[in-house]
Image (tube, rainbow, N blue to C red; front, side, top):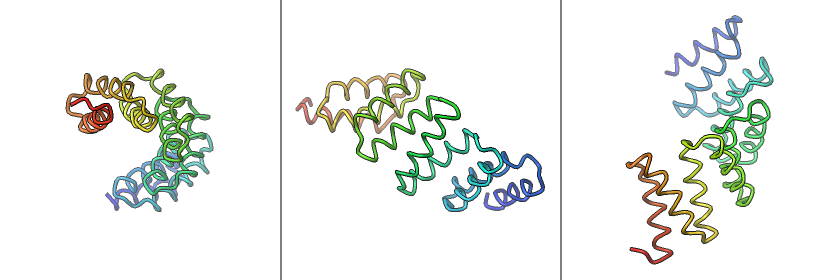
Length: 170
């Protein structure tokens, strides 16, 4: 995959769909855990196409992986400004969660859910916030919704068990 990532860079340098090729290279670098290379290719894609939604989304995901939450937050804002997708809204909520801005995160996660009811990670992050704020019944309900769609979601079982433990429901 690493060779493929470099091939995309070469194609971009030769002017063949440069923004898309830089992003493809970044995506492959991300999948192979080469985060600095991914960030470099993403910056090149954004230089070529300044309002490149998918590049900002991937940039946010990379920053989250390397625990650079302030940078991830900025990328999520850029992704939302270029295209107000449910996933970009989720990423903004997720970065706010990691930054400890629980009220803002809850608001953005609810917006993401209103745009896409199948964005299950939004429900799970929201349930985590609800555990923190001791809103255990809402956390349980969000987990049960996720499990009604994905019965094998181990993280939903985990959060639900934590919420039940807090409530002393066994």
